[in-house]
Amino acid sequence: MNKDKISLKEKIGYGFGDAASSMFWKIFGMYSLFFYTDVFGITAAAAGTMFLIARLWDSVFDVFVGIAADRTKTKWGKYRPYLLWFAIPFAIMGVITFYVPDFGTSGKLTYAYITYSLMMIVYSLINVPYASLLGAISPNPEERNSLSSYRMSFAFIGSFVTFMLLQPLIDFFAERFDPESLENTQHIVDHSVSTSAVAWAMGVGVIGLICVILFLLCFSWTKERVQQIETEENVPIKTDLKNLFNNSPWWILVGTGLAALLFNAIRDSVAIYYFRDYVQVNYKMTGTGWDITTIYFLIGQAANLIGVIAAPSLSAKYGKKRTYMISILLAGFFSVIFFFIPNNLTLIFLLQFLISVFAGYVLPLLWSMFADIVDHQEFLTGRRATGLIFSSSSMSQKLGWALGAALSGWILAWFNYMPDAAQQTADTIFGERIMISLLPAACCVLAFIGMIFYPLTDKKVKEITRQLEEKRNS
Image (tube, one colour):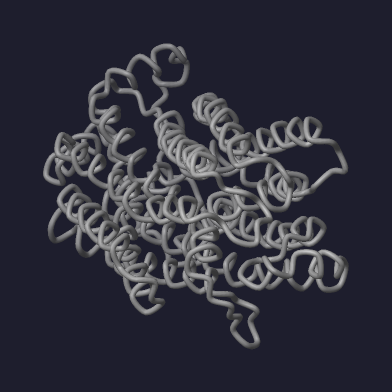
């Protein structure tokens, strides 16, 4: 096992993988509900149900991808090959998913279920092995913290790029290939991104091409160093699953991670509706085409990045668990304040910045903790099921987004949201305000309570690492 420090190039290369994943993930999280209601043409309730069903199935599929990755043997390693094999299918499925066919209502809904489910499957086939790669690049907890920080930093950079490019790309393609759509929906376009179907497919296609390049660079610039012990090779799958289900820290981390991701999913999915229907500021930044919603997203990503960069130093000083708990609690506190502020852009942007900084601390710590769970399980059982455990982290991520997107669609329907309406009702706007503030705050409280019971302190993790290293050396 090579114990040398990981080079800057390799850390950047590893970060490129999550930059690519996040570019699409942000489209799914922040734009897909709007796409399906206002571009694709199905109801908010139908879209919410579809998100839940498709992602619930896909969350289970993640576990099988993790098991398969653990047993993959190639000259490139166990996990890196998936970046090579599925980079291009990833981009192609993105375009197919955001294509609007000329079908009736039932045909469209069937198409949406099939394509969205396939997109999530391809996402799993590349993202679960990518996440597992963190546990195979280095056995050192400090290096993993650094890799996790690079990963999340580039994830937010990738999201930032998506927000900078997607709306201008869609508006650009709409103006050139579908000008009629702009005329027919001008009352909506004034306050939001274009609803041109052809422009959405083409805009997502450009983002997909960038993703392919980033995945291939991640494959080329990284290396797997942590090798599996020979006696582990033929362990039955049911043994891995039994060990995982008996791992109480894993259950706690999945639960608290689910709540934290639910916080992000609900806030993000309703933002477009909130700004279009409640804030109603008709503005696009000269030279960029960014509207107020895009600027709000960009502020959030920049603030998230600040939190991600600061997370390793804060966790080194105060511990992962304590840093996580304080951060998620403060994100919830400022989310409550968000509900009570007046319709004032300065206050909205200020609260978005504060909430996003503290939310940014959480995600790199969450991924780093899953790497600690891998060591903990190896320490208890002698079996290092990296892919399976990291697939569970992906599972919690998808469940969080699934429940968040489904709840968002159902709540919008409950408050009588009407696509293409020139003006939503007061009840609908009130529901949108709750969804961007109080509901996410409740998720933060749940995540905080869950982390109280998490037993793997930094001191315990270091001791486990020391004993595992002695065992491997012997």
